[in-house]
Image 1 (tube, rainbow over the protein chains, first blue to last red):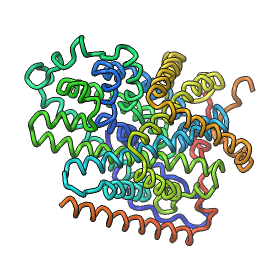
Image 2: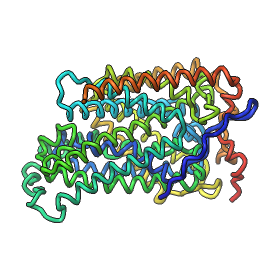
Image 3: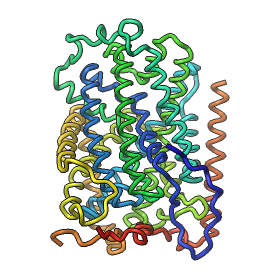
Image 4: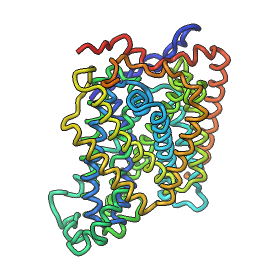
Length: 469
Length: 53
């Protein structure tokens, strides 16, 4: 993979010109966006699955949720290689299902990414405070710096933002690989003690219901890979770059998830693994190597930074797209004439993220992010069925066609239902509150806001009429 | 050192936030709203994709 060099800053567009987002990204940036958002989940989050169902449950959900996300990546690649617009799944929903679904999907996106950004900033602040061990040191300064510096980077241009993300994501990923090979994974007994820590007696301490409950945190292995689609309007060749970057990202994450589980489950008992906030950092500490310990500390910070950076990018584009179609005031649809970024959307979401980061609890922020993500995946399974029905293969040009249709859609839908049940077991009241919120906001959109929407102009894809219309 | 880093983080955050607010004000007073919100979804596709199979 290669990264383009940063071009000279664009001259301000002259009055009267059309100002749009810049098409400067390639497949490596798409990979950096997707994997950058997700990789923090290997450094914290996935391990709470062990608390719900034991170490083996964390492995089972690693593979089963991996199947869910492989379906997400395949479906997303096909639809986005055709609907190449900022807003990603929002633009897909608008063209394939309808405006009300699109409005809800955009809100799922903004909530999922903003809450994930908040969680990343809190994690980064807490990690620094834990490392410092200084009495009176508060995490708020580090949270503020994370959110503001990354917002500034996003404000200044997408190419530099995702070049930075590529470098820090690659460094964090390499640290997992270094840790994996440092503990002699080919030899049990020296450093790794999987056969002692995971036995038939404790592998599934709560049985199969524990495995179901673990789904909620298994999502963390891959949460956010679908964010690659938000770059659709800024990649040079959407039909080639998006499927390539997304699928390469998914393969990368499957490997990282497997390595992470193997190292951590072989070094820590499930009772500890399921409650620590830093499974990989703790594993590095257990090796006794100060070099590895410091490496994984830095990698945890880099992964949190990369994730927050990608989340700001994606949330701002979803919000910007809503403004552009008048689903929200058109004021949000402004593009910076020099940096070509949705600068007002970035600035609007900045204080919201800061407020949540200062007042919200990490678990609450993570739960809201996961809930919005799973709602979005459920939509995607229905969306692809409708897409193939309305525009069958051969009727429009697709950059990528996913295999075995409708099997991935069915698998995705079934796994989403299981995950909703798992979330209900752990966070039932939040689930009900969130569904009630989306219901009420849908009523507001239908009865009030929709009269402002550009009804004809919002459908921009030059497609033939759908079958049956 | 960590306390100093904490103060530096606040300082950087305030400086960058003020810079973004200044730039936002400058852009909004230099360019018309029509220009700033002139982006249209699917501009490229309308030109390059004809969907003839």
